[in-house]
Length: 297
Image (cartoon, rainbow, N blue to C red; front, top):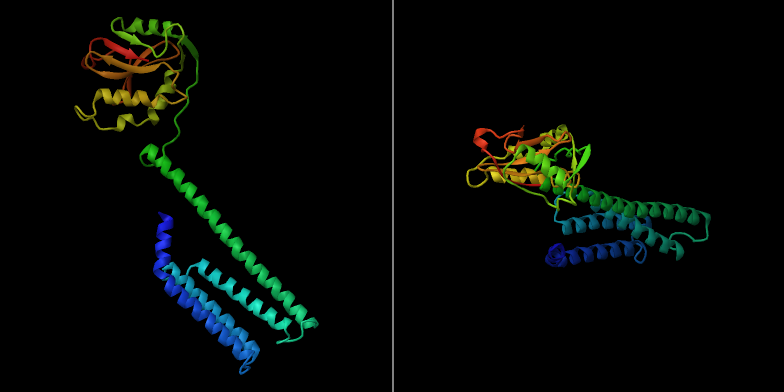
């Protein structure tokens, strides 16, 4: 897409660009001829006119192609580099062919040597500044991409990093089922792995509360039949599904009327977390139901 736009812009302006370039060349040849072939003006004035014509012409040409009414730094750099390079080559040719003074004289060698250094510095500065500009553009683009990726994940402003839990102990699937069953005698308990092979990490309840302080599930608006208790519960449970938390004893809890998140801490206490408020309790409130229907961990 970018290539097509550049090609279209060039096709629409190439006739004008060729016209400006041709005019610059014609004026430079005329100015040079007046000081050398026709010899109606001093040759120094002729070379100076070539420099002025080239500088102004390249500025006009680059500004014309950029479609920007304001002169940019890169356009001025191009005009300076083109002017000094052309004047240097013309001056060098005149010295070699003896139009200014003999090439073997000390004065010629000194002037040419100093002029060569000046042109070399300008050329290095021109290409070096372009490299710096390209580097800064790539760096800025990468920063924008990182910022956009972060905003896409967080939905706007960047959030602080999620706290990591400290593992206090581990329990097997059978042990975890026994702990939960001690608090909820009814209902089904589904573990992600077989009870004999599953191993779950346990942390302090304070680690889970620190996670809830950063998580924003409770900031969503409850909408009946569209985003209600089971949606809140699935969303909060999913937030714990990152690598640092995925192996901890945290799951989805369904009572006979309500959905929440269940967790077991390092003291083997079973907690029910209300996703809409981040409130935690060890037992069900009346409006939350009478018994556990099932839990998935």
